[in-house]
Image (cartoon, rainbow, N blue to C red):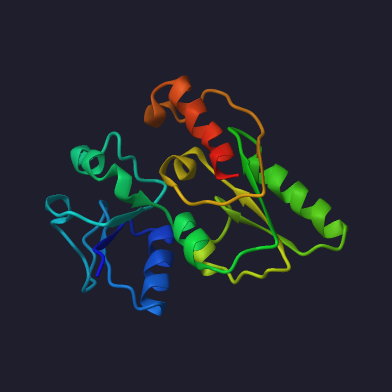
Amino acid sequence: NKKILIFGYGKTGKSVQNYFIKNKINHTIWDDKRKLNIKNFDDKYHLKKYDYIILSPGVDIYHHKNKNFFKKHRKNIITDLDIFFLFEKKFKYIIGVTGTNGKSSFCNLLNNLIKKNNIKSRVLGNFGNPVLNENTSKNEYCILELSSYQLDYSKYIKLDSACILNISADHLDRHETMTKYKKIKFKIFNFL
């Protein structure tokens, strides 16, 4: 009976929609860039109240034309990662990695090192396929690459280990100050 809005219909939004269809979860969809020819498209989303808004990481709620809608519903915003951690099977061990530069390279290196020790492992998150498209295994390690956008909106990620590789001025058009950017990056430790 919850009202759920998928906001953003790119790769992440489509993976959430497929997950919801598979699990028979009612939802509506909005994307700023196109009118969608699908039955559950909501062109008046900003006039309604939602229990959950599943936001694609690329959506900038702070500078959006309907930023007041997002400000009013901030506590209701979650991500595909939140859905994954709330409802999907878990991995044996999950390592969260963030930083301004080198995340993908570091995650690949770490993945190769773990596999060299005959442990099943994979990289997910801000890397390749959305997490809801992946089959999980309780015998695998997961290296989760996390962008500042994902960290900003997520609430229910659960990590066994976490690291920040580095922090330098980046995405300040969105985060505005280094102080805000650092605060979002350090949020990774709240998920331990």
